[in-house]
Each structure stands twice: as structure tokens, then as C-alpha cells.
Image (cartoon, rainbow, N blue to C red; front, side, top):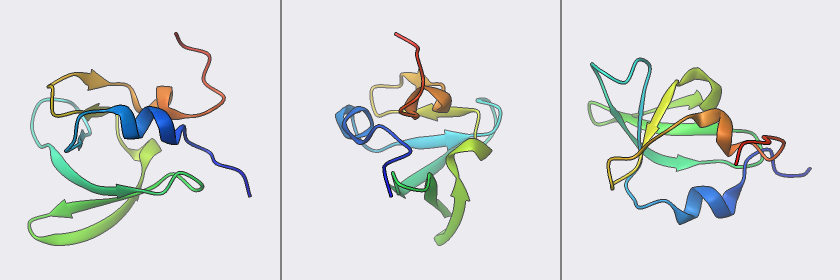
Length: 79
């Protein structure tokens, strides 16, 4: 099985990472990302929840840069 996500790009981001549905209200800390399937484990009030990267609209790194999660897919053509 090949990777779905660009592991080098994800690992190059300043940690920790956070995800949000709308980029305004709630930001959930990312525990880990599985690059072959796109599954993401987030910390929700002290409990781990498994989601998929496609469930989120925004990913923020520790430098406060907000990324579109679609750009993490290997087949993405964005610069």
C-alpha cells in the first residue's frame, strides 16, 4: 500500500499541529497522522478521537500558519 499523504511535508511543519472545522471556534490538537490512510488522532478534552484528514478544513502549525489539508495529499498539484 502506498502513502496517501506527503509525510515529508507534514513532518516539516513546526509542531504541534491543530485542526479545525471552521478556523474560528475550536482547534483540536493533533496527536498523530497516519500517512497511508489519512487517519488523524486528535485530543478531545483528554480523550483520543480518530477522524480523517478530509473531515477538517484547516490545519494550523506551531508557527500559526494555517494550511489547507488538501495540500497534504500526494496527488495535489498546488505549489
